[in-house]
Every structure is written in structure tokens, then in C-alpha cells.
Length: 299
Ligand SMILES: CC(C)(COP(=O)([O-])OP(=O)([O-])OC[C@H]1O[C@@H](n2cnc3c(N)ncnc32)[C@H](O)[C@@H]1OP(=O)([O-])[O-])[C@@H](O)C(=O)NCCC(=O)NCCSC(=O)C[C@@](C)(O)CC(=O)[O-]
Figure (cartoon, rainbow, N blue to C red):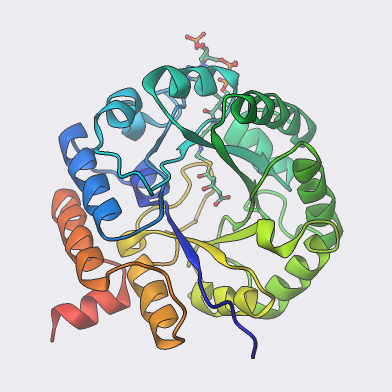
């Protein structure tokens, strides 16, 4: 089994996690949490999104979060931006990296972004151009690559085609997302092999929700194909408010435990990560969904 020597973990809990929590975390606590995450050695921490408060009220304080975190020089802090207005807001607040959103499914595109797949790609193209011109780092999510809560099965050919379009728009990193966590390892491999026909494997990241408990197995199957960028969420927080039934991403603690066991370097400190997880779970008043965090708290 040929696996990458190093994996870049992209921590998404401050955005993907908190966007779906019922409890509203204070701005101050978000800032403390993000600082704990970056001090744990995570190379990329997605911190918030510049979307209208009526769409995602939990992240209405995005400007203050962007302005107030303590930035470490080697850490990238993307902000999710759904359109040009969001991009302008992120830029004005001082963001130096953004994530754009596209979908492989028409149903999800409509519910999540109120536009067609084609219109969504057009929005991505405008933002990518402007962001790259200004020297910002960019990544582009492609949702519903393994199934859609509205349209059901999405063909591998459709995923390959939309991913290629996003790449042709200049997107430097394509994040293949299992929005509702329905994928299984064989399907993951078939999808990634198809996408990798037109996009170099080092440009691909995976973002797997764990609704059916398949996320770690799916990640391992992506690693076997050479994918070396993996999204995850401390404590398994989150989900998408516009994807019915989606649970949180794979827990970062569980991902790190697996990568450590495989001797794959990440630069992330498990102890500090567990501290960050305890902090945010206390703020949310809930128990972690990370099996590793639960097991280690009982030691
Ligand atoms: C794209 C829109 C904004 C279209 O939303 P819309 O309502 O169609 O937008 P609009 O252009 O018609 O404008 C309507 C109103 O919103 C305002 N507006 C317009 N844009 C903005 C903005 N950026 N910030 C603040 N205000 C804005 C605009 O000014 C106007 O104000 P009003 O007239 O009502 O007073 C909306 O559909 C949206 O925000 N969608 C994103 C929802 C979201 O955040 N979903 C979760 C993130 S995606 C996800 O979690 C999946 C992912 C990434 O993790 C990967 C995976 O797992 O699949």
C-alpha cells in the first residue's frame, strides 16, 4: 500500500462545525478556539464564512472573527465566500485566503446557493480571478460528489465534468466533498480516479462527513490514490444546514490518530488538539463525537 509521507489536515470546525450548531458560541470563544487550533500545529484552519446572517446566523460575527484571531505566520486561514459580495466582505475584514463553493448536483446548488450549477461556477470564476490577482490562497469545494440529499445518486461522469470546469477556472485546490456522508471506499476510489483523469492528484483534497461511519475508511482509500490534503472537524462538529441529515465531518482527533498510526507526518499535536476539543465542547455544552477524544478522556 503506497501512502503519502505527509498529509495536510484542513481544520473546518470553526466554519463547517459551528454553522450547524444550535448553541450560539460567543465571538470571544470562537477566537480563543481558533487560536487553540492554530497553536496545535494545524496548517490550515477555516475560520468562518461571509454569508448573509439570514442564511447562517451562527456566523454573523464573521468580520470580527477575521479581524481578531492571532494569526501564526505559517497557518492559512480560509474564509468561505459564496459570492462576490461575500468575497468583498472577507477582503475588507482582512482575509488572506478564501474557499468558494460549487456543487455537482442541481438540487443542492439551488438549496444551498440559490443558483444553478452553471451560475455557481460563474460566481466561483469571478472570485477565483480576483482572489488570485490579490495574492490570496484559494480552495474550491465541490459538494455532493458521492450523493445528494435532493437528487440522490450523482454520476461519476457529472462529478468529473464539474470538477474539471472548476479546475479550468483556475481553482488551485478542488475539495471533493461527501456532503451527506453516504460514500463508501469503492465509490470514493471510482470518483477520485475519474476526477484525476483531468486534475493532478496533488490538487485534490477530500472533505468527508461521517453520517454513515464511513469517513475514515473513505479517507484511507483516497490516501491510497495519493490524495494528501484532508479536511476534518475537531469533535466531529457540524454539518451543512442546507443538506438534510448531514452529520459532522470526520473528527480531526480520529483522523490524526489514524495518520499517526500509519507514520504519516502532519505536524499536529494530539494533546493540544484534545484540549481544543474539550474547550469547544464545553462552550457548546455537548459531548465530543470523536471516538479518540472519548477513549482518551477515560484513560
Ligand atoms: C449565495 C447566497 C448569498 C445567495 O442568497 P440570495 O438570497 O439568493 O442572494 P441575493 O443575491 O438574491 O441577495 C439577497 C440578499 O442577501 C444579501 N446578500 C447577498 N450576498 C450576501 C453576502 N455574501 N453577505 C451578506 N449579504 C448578502 C443581499 O444584499 C440581499 O439582501 P436583502 O435584499 O435581502 O436585504 C446564499 O445562498 C448563501 O449564503 N448560501 C450559502 C449558504 C451556506 O453558507 N451554506 C453552508 C456552507 S456550504 C457547506 O457547508 C458545504 C461544504 C462547503 O462544507 C462542502 C460539503 O460538505 O459539501
